Length: 169
Image 1 (cartoon, rainbow, N blue to C red):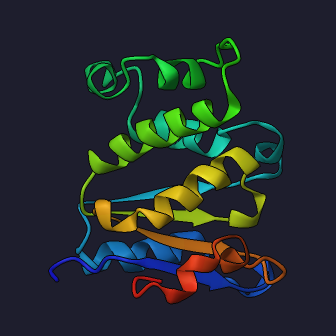
Image 2: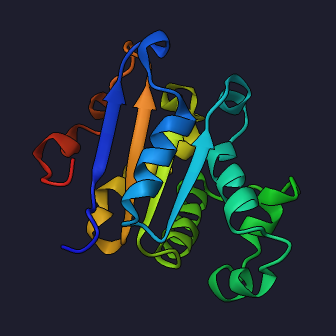
């Protein structure tokens, strides 16, 4: 394949992790991805539902600039409300999670040949983790790769056990 596609997880102590800039520079030098999107998870994310995706949408898609993109993908304004921190009425929990999954699946399909670098993955919020688990399970439908770094105490495949049997992990 022209562009390597997969989920690469780097586990280790933060003290021994290479600097983010060094990793991103090495990937950029290869020139195999249209874009590299860095997202750093932080402690505050754990307590804010879908905060990972809010950061992704805000920084990468420049929500305010590319409003038309979102109008075609997200007719329910779910992403707009997420980015602007507008409270929505509560629906069925399962239905809400599925809605977020469908919108984020569509958004990721709109950025082919992209590498998403997620740093400090162990600090991701539970809602985003659930949606990412689903996205990892539907990995073949996307043309996006992931480079994920996390602390030595965390294990990605503990929550996503299906990854162990997948060739892209």
